[in-house]
Length: 294
Image (cartoon, rainbow, N blue to C red; front, side):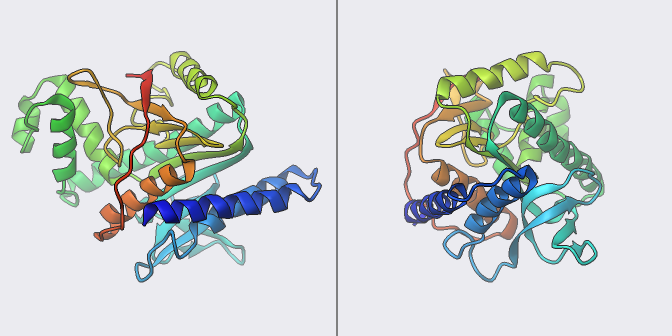
């Protein structure tokens, strides 16, 4: 099912892109809006989103953040901003946040990573508040992913976690938060022509942005960076996971696989967890190249 759905999504995006490219347009905001609309309309299809779950694709704002969001997959009603087509949603109703670029340059990568890291920071603060208030108690998938990464039993209680080595506490806390966090996706229609070029650009960004306020920490990096058919994928078990050797976590991997399929994997995984439904995944094999960063 997901294979056929991804093929239809890829065909839709290709057809809509061809139509937009056929019309000369030098007004950059209008051109950018046209490409954002392609992604939004592509996701808002019956073969992508299941019916009956009150899922919507909107643009607007996440409550508490200043930056406008190109495209959000949300659930339920939000606050309409005046008479515009923009909506304001609290972070706990947001399943996925997408930022769209027509042509992805290194400056666009840095800009997009910065905007999407703000979303993840905002979510972390919200997560901590909810956890301390007893509103988050489901960590089963985080425990499963932790065990797969380390080959050891996961902490099964707050007491076990407090007694664990600091590296284990940091890893488990990151996995637990990412399980509940919205997927963040940086989507470019073109730009980088090779997988190696895209990988090296991310490595340069990560190495140049090290420190307490870094936007390039593993938890803050986008879930998916897609440029044409090239993908950089965060391997946090949502849904992908990569290990180098016996127990070294590969935070980011790359692939030249069908980008529409990878995008759907992220969307459907988040829908399953958020809406407590089963999506029609089929057996898939993705050729990962996991040497980007650990």
